[in-house]
View 1 (tube, rainbow, N blue to C red):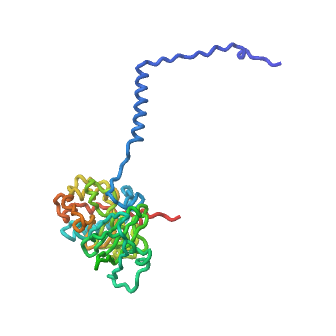
View 2 (cartoon, rainbow, N blue to C red):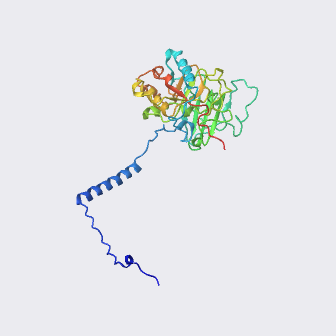
View 3 (tube, rainbow, N blue to C red):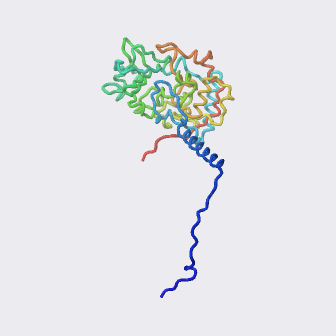
Length: 359
């Protein structure tokens, strides 16, 4: 027989619900706090993040090298020596002021519609090649079926660069030493990018108009950039002494450099303005200040070898439309635009920075 202890037989006390009294004022405060938190969370969701403002017709998408934020990228070990060399290049030429190419050696750009007639651009063998480059001309060639406007004007200067963008077909062409002879367009070199809005921003196969194969239009300062008051893409930079062509830094695809110095800058090198620099304290021209801020976020990319350190602008005086640059520069001469730019505060990013890794 089992027994039951005295404790177990003791009658249990009924459970009593304790009444908690909360003052009405506290209830009101709590309700207001909850309401504020809900509204604040909705604002955080609905508040737009940082937006980019691109020029009308800008051809490259967010996945291209021209749209990458490099403000937190690492700095190359050899950066100080490369930057000293670049700053010296600026100091030794044209009164120590880098060029802002508006009137010559610019980037002439035309956006065309689907009804623009396409023509085969003839190959001008201005370099005296002993062979016809494969894939340049003929059916499907880089210079075939190009929708060049009849009244297009290449940029002034020996390079005579000309860019044509067809948004409808999502294609972009860049021609080097383009000219119209006896009613027919011809060019010494050039290239085509298909699916340009999804492209990395450079030509492949040795084609293109720049010495590096990078698209000139991706890094030029557009008229609309200045109208918008900001530049939301990387900038092309031409320098005097590009490292020997055997050394190329991605995203460059090739090089025309000849400098064998260990500290020379390879084509394709990304150069960022130190993000800690307070641009407002530099006393720069409005355009140079825009360039400086863009260089802190997107950087420069070395695209070409030239007779001066130069930033390229969208072609002005040689376009069929009126030249907008005198008004955009607010009376300042193009050779004065970059005065005071802190070239010695640039930072070179590591070799091949941003190159996709293969699986």
